[in-house]
Each structure stands twice: as structure tokens, then as C-alpha cells.
Length: 172
Image (cartoon, rainbow, N blue to C red; front, side, top):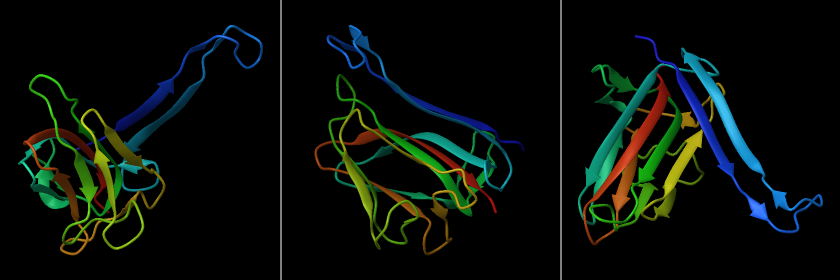
């Protein structure tokens, strides 16, 4: 099995008026792009998981990073390191989410992405995106099966929530 990935994120802004530099329009762009090769070293990944998951009203969805998930071909996602993750709380609207999500915490949490013993990111409002990525030799953190392998997604009370998640990892 071979896995390659491309991360391309940008934010484009257009301001019309008396712009910096004297022109009538100012259009800055902040962009991050990186190609990820197949493998287990720096700049590489060999595991992925992408899914749409539902978490019940006021409940937790514990995403196990050490062997429970699979890719589209049925290969196990048993990460030794996590290179990146992206979570999208689908926007509010007809048939969409109305509740906030929080990422992190829980029992046996994966904590590589922030400090502390039970760190969280959130609340992620409907329409929010959270993403962390590091392609260096350590990635965003080490996954330790049984003690540090759960990425918890907590749903606030009010309704079930269907979110999207992408994980990129290394098996060694």
C-alpha cells in the first residue's frame, strides 16, 4: 500500500479602499502547501483515515488512533505518530449541525498537539474547522496504544452532530 498526500490551505482577503501601499485594493494571501511522500520519516506518512461520523446529543465519540480505524481499502490505521488531523463541524442550516464540538480530553487521551494532561480545542461552532499538521520527524505527537491513543470529540447538548474527520499518520 502506498499513501501520498497534499496539504494546501489558503486564506485570501480583499480590501477595497485606501490600501497600504497607495493602491485602491489590497489583496493579501496566507498560504501553506506541502506534499507528503509515502513512508515513516520526516515529510512522510503511510496511514490515513477519512470519515463522516455522528456523535449523539451530549455524548462523546472516542476516535481510537491505535488500530480500530481503517482506510478506504480496509487497511488498519494503527498510528505510532500522528502527522495531522482536520475536523469539520458541518455548518448550521437545514439538516445540518446546531451543536458545538470540543476535541481532546477523555480517558487515555492523545495529547501530543497541546500541553497539559487533558487539553481540549473548542468549542468548534457549526461551520468551524480545526486542523493541526506537522510533517517533521515527530509529527504532532506520539500515539501510545492503551494510554495515549484516544482523540475524543465531545458534542454539546441539543442534538446529534455529524462531523467530518481526516487523520494522517505514521505506522512507525
